[in-house]
Length: 114
Length: 114
Image (cartoon, rainbow over all chains, first blue to last red; front, side, top):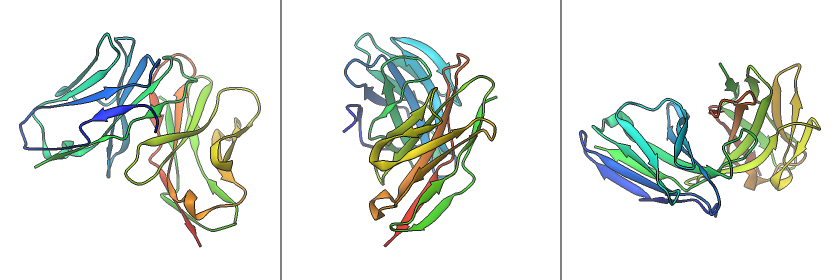
């Protein structure tokens, strides 16, 4: 158990809908990262927050947004969902924002868009 | 732009034999390099990292990795493979010059045969 929690575990929804994925980092970790893992694209970095502020952006679509709250939990919002958004979404956390810190991954949320 | 390559989609090795999972990278500054392992239906788990210092890094579960600056490689190794090592392995790189982005390789599936 990494100490990172993600809810829900599974989510099934329809095209055009909007969903929110939630992540609670390990106790004491200030940095949160979001990743998308699909069969054809591998593990794609979406976005990073550190202590409530956005720190780095990867291949995140404009339909997707995220935020980190004062209690350090984070939410990833996915809107106008398309079939291609079906994937595993992982949240990870680390102590600091620096490059030498390893990340601790949550168990993931499996999103299925029908 | 930083990148990481795992040239093999799958590596098969007999139990008890040494294993190597390959990773090469490209960054503009000094690299921070990581290996993670993913078991079925689980999030990624940190194995080891290279930040600075000794080129041979030892990590969890008997794994080690060798940093080779001239060949820009960071191959994962284990002297004697176990069936339980069968999993998906990801190499990741972070540019030490200040960008916070993490880039993951496409993953290598390791299959250890009994």
